[in-house]
Length: 384
Image (cartoon, rainbow, N blue to C red; front, side, top):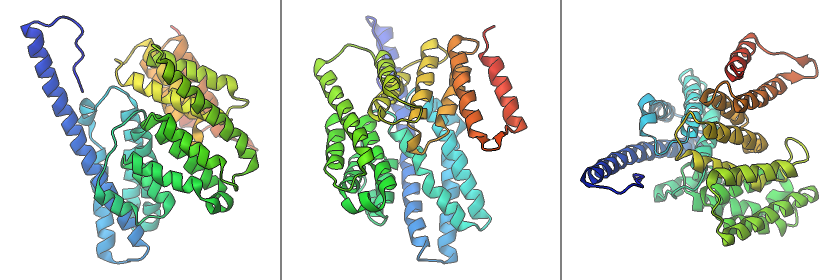
């Protein structure tokens, strides 16, 4: 991370830059070392979980248990927030969710419920993917990771490669799934999910419209794509084409304004709350909000607006298996800028989402602790 220094620098200024650069370098090194260790442990776990179906020995189970506990310890680091590589609060938000899920898996495995714990461990990769595809990210390459990936089925392989930040390899794996006629015919929902995950990498992690276009071209020429899904593909392709045109214009619009305009365009084109016809615009909006938050100091109105925007985009992107993330962004928005009109908007969206989650054919049944939480958040959000 480079120090930001816009003033003319004298000797003291140069010393400050030198010290800041060293501190940032140490911070980055500490973070990268921890991430590398977590990727290594997660890689071993994925391999062992696959072998667990074939090898049922006490030593094998003990290895899974040990690595799960290790992952819990590495992902629970209160001081790590001070060493995170950027200011985006998403790192803390997603990291907490990851730690909670891995902790539950560890408890299940310790109690002897290996199958249930293993199922939970397979699902934690979604949090890694969410963090590593927030916006433009460096590609992580490790031959050992690719070796492990080749032992997984094609869906697990693509998700695993994305989780450990091997984006280029993951894109190739998703492209292969999208081009597969049999998968499109026999497993249409998994096929659609894989396409969306591939687009997430191309648009957010790689910021590459050409890669997104190749995925959509492969989807459109696949003869077994459900006919009802084709209009969505065409709309997404149109969104990518618009992106290409914008890149040629080299707009001076900053990330915050770009994110807001993409969000507005996406909402305008939506016909209903979970309509994914604006999937590309929402992906781009979320990436721009994340990029803005990486460099923005907390407790400002703009940061609260960005968190609100992320809540709206993740609500629209609920298909990406992070169903509760939007609610956490709304909560963070209220916490960042309480007693304001923007925090009131965040509370309204949060309340609507929570109430919908506890509603069914027999009516709405909110647990006492949820009612209490809603009451507290409403007080925080209300203008003084």
